Length: 273
Ligand code: SF4
Image (cartoon, rainbow, N blue to C red; front, side):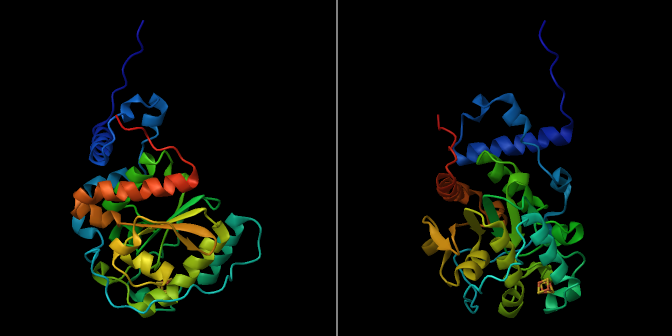
């Protein structure tokens, strides 16, 4: 006797439809051959954000226009000498405290420290929190976060297996790009987090993350498509999900970047039909 089919609620149906559309945009057409369990694992944290106002999302500059900002060199490792990664991250969070080190603290609702596995092999770095992130205290939980979740799932990973953080931990006013003094003040905390996690691969999402990680002010096109090294990790540069939402045609380019990351991690790319 066949098993009764499972009826999905409308929001889950919508999320799955969005996931399938994303896969088709990547050129992936055989995802349906994956085990049913893999499809079920396409659940997305922050599902409710589908109904959120798109205007609450960060507004990022055109990816080919890098605003003038002072490149910075990566500082020396200053992570606490604690062998437990989770404990070390907690110490960094305590050291940040109710931070007032830069002007961004004035408009902050929640400080967005980071989210994910303290032992992640893969770490994503974005620019800064938007309205949804500022409200929830978590990175990438709005529409751009939904897309990042889809990208992570397409790599065959779960969100909780990776780590996600931003260059600045407090939301810039009107979601503007962080000023150099703000990014230079906050970025050392990110570097400490990366020193603790020691990911094999870092994916810089957009120009701001690439600029402050690599200390290079270059158009994104000149940084994408190759493997950089950063303090013992491989670093891949790709588009910010918010940019991909505005220009979905670039999703295939982003997928090509993620496949470089997958290759470095030894992950098998889904076969194309
Ligand atoms: Fe502190 Fe960073 Fe927030 Fe600035 S953005 S107030 S440095 S936590």
